[in-house]
Amino acid sequence: MAFEKNILCIGAGYVGGPTMAVIAAKCPQYKVVVVDVDKEKIRAWNSDNLPIYEPGLHELVKKTRNKNLFFSTENEKGIRESEIIFVSVNTPTKTFGQGAGKAADLQYWEKTAREILAYSNSSKIVVEKSTLPVRTASAMERILNENSKAIHFEVVSNPEFLAEGAAIQDLENPDRVLIGSRETPDGIAARKTIVEIYVHWVPRERIIESNVWSSELSKLTANAFLAQRISSINSISALCEKTEADIGEVAHAIGMDSRIGPKFLEASVGFGGSCFKKDILNLVYICESYGLEKVARYWEAVVEINEWQQSRFIQNMLTNMFNTVAGKKIALFGFAFKANTGDTRESPAIYVAQGLLAEQAEVVITDPEALKNARKDLKGFKKGLTFEPNPYNAVKGSHAIAVLTEWDVYRELDYKRIFKSMVQPAFIFDGRNILDRKKLFDIGFNVFSIGKAPLKHF
Ligand code: UDX
Ligand code: UDX
Image (cartoon, rainbow, N blue to C red; front, side, top):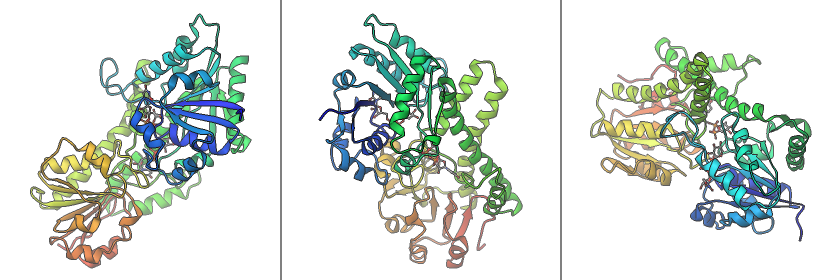
């Protein structure tokens, strides 16, 4: 069967995989191929054990795989046969040279652009899915279009706004889809071609078109604003703990103001994930490079508050457990950076585990999906660290529990049973404010939440 369009995606990660699965499911008349340099990952995408966990993803992949969705390592064939190429390779923070620790490392993007150029013998639309610094499209266009093959590449920006754990839902029912291009006739035509894909399931009024720079910058700005809300509420949580105000009540009261809105106001042990910190630091770097020092410092503070919130959490544990955790068993409930994912990138749990291990605590980590990644993240630590899938086993003989991920399973545990199996006095530090603190206190726990007065029996 001949397909109407041939789409390729380079990079089969958290973004590329789910995005292409949804496009394939919504557009059976298109052929969608996803390639990756990582052979193991492609093998996993072709198996029953997908490389990432997302609710609903497995069903979609099963429905479309080897019909109009294909996972492969054959980049050359994929590039040659496609008219539209999405690029969602990773763009981590640079760890070396100029801009180290802040700027985006674009080496994989540039390598991918050169690979596209080398294997192409017809004109193509190249779509930026990865988050990139504003004006990257211009560099990419220069690399792609300085060729002697008489072919032309149009670079379009179509940033991804999906949140992990809700990726399929966000892709199927997005608040908006943003597509930016050059405002030349060729640029606008390329933009329309990408719009055509999304109109299969996204209402037309939710598909926004813009110039390519606005699109690139909107992605960084959206993440910066979201992270800023969390740092804002977390900064106020510290003040609540000093004043007996309750952060839940404050968030509720301000969130009822329709100008502020109720979402993203949950105080926590801090935000994690692969995007927020990386994108803000990237924004900071861009501002610095344009001489906008004040703007750079403003956004940098969002990351600083997040780091402070994480260290405050550890400090609070130490102070309340009589200034020492050495030799004490502590169970960490959750290691993923948020619920419903196995992803642990930039998870506050990494920082908390490392802090407690540095204090010579005996750390036991439990998580329904993230233990494999947790082992990798903490592979440098041999002493005092264990992993246990069952939370009841994890807490046996422990002095304290720290809730670090808001998994539903932790809300529903039998805390009476847990209390009896712990060393007394027993402590709970709820870094996600998901537990019924009054009930826990009545059972006998000393309860410490974020942004609320502690409930102590001594
Ligand atoms: C990626 C980007 O990291 C991020 O900047 C953007 O916001 C969204 O897309 P993600 O999908 O989470 O995020 O990254 P990851 O899961 O690491 O996937 C990237 C994939 O690209 C990896 O599987 C990697 O093997 C692959 N890759 C990388 C290539 O196929 N070729 C390369 O040259 C480099
Ligand atoms: C984020 C953006 O939401 C998404 O649009 C973008 O494409 C990628 O980055 P993601 O990192 O997957 O998505 O998760 P998100 O739900 O935004 O949560 C990020 C972190 O903030 C998590 O650690 C979460 O626990 C934390 N968070 C979120 C809070 O601490 N409080 C809140 O109120 C909301």
